[in-house]
Length: 403
Image (cartoon, rainbow, N blue to C red; front, side, top):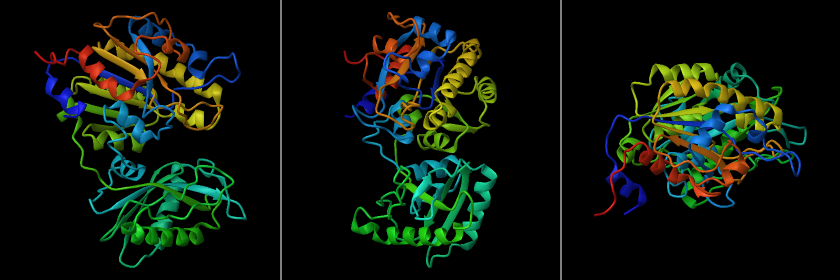
């Protein structure tokens, strides 16, 4: 029997409430050999207090040395082994924006990007165009792309991000990304991983070819990249596994998408911490488990903006007293993965985590930072999938195992 099912058999009900605060891409690196990371640099008295009263460590989102995408990283936080429960970004985006994705559909996450005269990518995000521009370009593609026997849906998501959905018989998601994930390279061909995906890869190639012609005179978004081809999965739901009535509060669709795929209620909100915490307060009596997501820390890391990431972490710290006034029984603060500003991308580095509850046996950590958490009682590289059992135990929601 899997560990998830074993945990499920021990779950018991009570009135406790669990809050999980995720600062996307929280983990970082110092800008020099003996310097501090973004989290260590930030002034975080409220998080430091929780760390001193709780237990700390560094978690591995997927596995040692593996750099996670945001989808797998969040699944790990929710207790689902990312190596067992695999899904591409497309389905997550589709569910996140409320698109009625069918079982036979194939979805992909898209970026509008900029290519130079030689066809090589100069900006993977087209300067982070605004959402109205994304909407205009999506509508243009919806209107002009025509593929025989295929329904094509292009939907704006946010800024440079869009959703592509293909609807036809006999589609497969076993297709390689067209996004090389770096500049100075040309977009890749959508190659099929197996013969059953040949039809799908051919359709995608047709879509990309038409889109290139349609977008060529746009500035700066004169091309597009696709990744995370996927279809709807059939997974056990969060409340079935853990007995928790859960909700997600997140500004970005992808994070609402992964929460909805595991059965959480998801609330859309502006990219504003005050509004996110106002929603938390509004719905505090309605749920047992709350996932509150902050995206901007990851964006600052990807932009290489160390100081902005520090400032955003401090913004979250100032909101912690509002959460504590609600009297949660368990508070978890962490990131889904590391996005060091000096790397400008996701990394494999373990992620700092604190867990506070009245049932904690506090360790010797006195502040919330990578090096401090490395010496916490949870260890320097524990699996992210252990977070939910720890939360349930500290909430008094797990019975004794065995006689």
